[in-house]
Every structure is written in structure tokens, then in C-alpha cells.
Length: 331
Image (cartoon, rainbow, N blue to C red; front, side):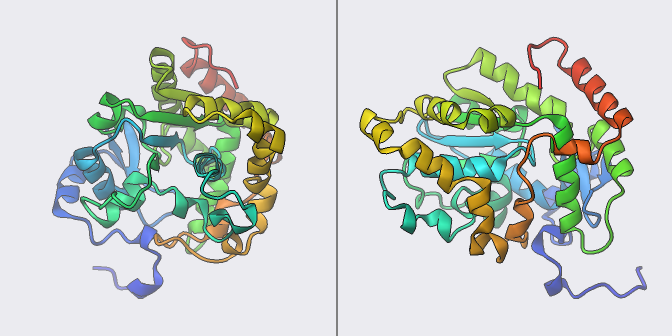
């Protein structure tokens, strides 16, 4: 029995509430290796080779069991803190550009990208074991942080398209460290402890390297269904990369759209500078309790140099080289 006073449940955001796990969840979790989560009041469990947070387990199990993919579905898959929010905004704008020609009345101006493109395992299947997905307009656009191995069979067997975004491990780690510190109710993670966990693979949906490799391998074998993107390249050549995504998703820009500057319009609307200054993203919360502003920090490449020591950089580079040795993957 704990004798100290816990905060009242209503004041604890939903993403930290671990107490109402289903019996099925408890049964699964009881047999899994467990570590403390970075945010501190939850636990991570090694499930199918990847670390899943307790509060997401029910959603992961229901998603795997009940999701019926359609050939027209589009799934954005990412490791956490790889530019997910940015790419959600881009994909939503790209696919819905005919519905919202007036950018001054665009849904992104009043809704956080995570509301417009929900996570399958942590939004849709966690609220409801078998959610009603009929309200999604065709093509349905979803997102996930699960590795390729853990996706439901129907997603792998169908012709649905998966867009995968990854980011160099050093910036991914630093961004994740900042993000988890924003979500903690008290205190902060020491950079060194978090770094040690990340290097051991103990991070949300980690090991990072195995996650990236699961989609990379599949994108080589199945390029018509999986597009592998790098955050750094998207930052460097956004118009080229956006055109590539549009081609892959079967909705290339027409010569008329190109002439009207639609590509640049989408990139401006979805830019970090624009999204981070919108009122909806400076205030407000997601239904999970995550504050919208937690998803917007810097959006830059190479910020890790402000946080990691030379030894840390060398260690991460060494692990990355080792893990990706058999591949042509370079960051």
C-alpha cells in the first residue's frame, strides 16, 4: 500500500493513467520484460521485439486483431519524434487539396495534425475495441508508431500504401528526451540516463534501429506499397520529396497545379513556422491529454550538437553503423 497522497485521477492526463488496463492486457503484460517508461508513471513492455507503453497495449492488441485494411488505405508510419506531426499535416493537405482549395479556411488552421490523422493504436483502437471507421473519407488516412513486424496481417496482405518517415538517431533521441520531459508531471529525465536507455533500445516503440530496418527492408522488397522517407532529405528538398510522395500515393500534381504553385502552398501551410504559431497548437490538448504545444519544439536538423557530448555522438554513430552494416542506409 502506498501511503503518500496521489493526485486525484481527474488531474492526471489520460496518457499517464495505467490503472484501468483490461484483463487481456494484464495477462499479456505479465509475461513480458518490463522497464520504467521515460515519462515515469508508466511501464514499457517488450512486445514482439519492441517496447510498448502499458496504456497503449489494449489499443495495440485491438488494432492487430480487428483492423481491416482496404487497398485504398494510406498509413503513415514513423518512429516517435521523426517529424510525424509535420508529415501528418503534409499528407492530409496533399490528399484533401481538392476539398480545401481555400487555404484560409483549411482544417489545419483550427485542428492539430494529430486530430486530423489519428494514430490507429493510441487513438482509434484504444477508445473502442472495434471503432467505427465509416466516417473516414476515401482514401482513409491513418498513422501508427508500430514496427512493420507488428502491423496487423490485413495491412501487410492488402495493397494499402505505407509512407514511412525516419530521422537520424541523434536528433530523434534529443527530440524524444525533450518531449518526454514536457510530459512528465514532475522532474526531468537526466540526459545520461535517457541516453543509456535509448542506446539499449529501451525507448517508446524502440529499439529505434530495428524499427527503421523493419520498414527499410520491406520498402526494398515491396517499393510499390512502401515509401521510405528521411526527415533530413524532406527538409533539404521539400518540393522534390512532396512530388515523390504525391506520385507514390497516386495523386500527382497536375501541370495546372504546378503552375498555380500548389506544391509550395502545401509546404508553406504545413511548415513548422506556420503550424507552431497557430493558436490551436499553442494551447489546447488532445483527447489523450497531451498538450498540443508539446509537438512543436524546433523542427531543425542537427540540434543534437547542442546536447550530446563527443563521446555520446561517437557511441550512437557506432551503434548505427553496426546495426545498418548490411544495408545501404546512411544518415
